Length: 326
Image (cartoon, rainbow, N blue to C red; front, side):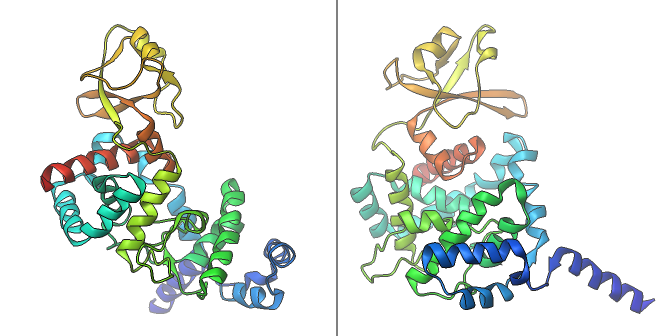
């Protein structure tokens, strides 16, 4: 009986983690050839690298059931917006005030937004992920067809950044989706937006809070963050015309004037021109929906993660942190 139990355990892990040499797969060999011909990599070195890679089917399971697809706002919000998270955010602020002030001066992004991003992503750097990045990206590149093109490009970017930064690609850890470091940058974002904020000629988003802070601020500025501009407005609705509006989209798709004509108005004095394009947001609370008007800066947060509840969690956590900091 004991032998049968051990066999079941072994079969379970074999089913969830494929330990076969993937360097012999045709799709992996094609990728290697592409990296050799287009980016000057050594075929021998890449083949040896992929011999060490593990395809992890648990990653695919995780990709297929992210929290936001199965939860309503009233369930999602408490995962990230809590007093404990805000208190930890204030502590992070005090410990990294110089870097946060520098980031605000350089990029125009307020400290509380940077801190909230890092809080939501990795709980201020305490949970950066434990998956080998090379395994995560390879699994999703070669065994996750619906997004294989995206992840194959990220795998390419990862190998390029490892070469540029002089690190062993087998050593870096991240999320199950291949996001890395305290700010959880994908490899392409790392290459484009990570900065050396300490002057030591390294872009270390794993161990340097200053580099992580500067990199997040650079990302936001590069994606159109507007200094001293609003993020969202709480809204109210009247009548039934608002029901025809498209809700919770990534791109701002309607003007303030058009919203008003449909019965959607802000609860507070608005600072935007009537022709400014915004997003109409509906979130489910326990007692029914609440409504918001998302401005350009809300859209910028969604460029970090294209989920409305994610962006709202960042905004609400940033508000709590700022209020608590005083």
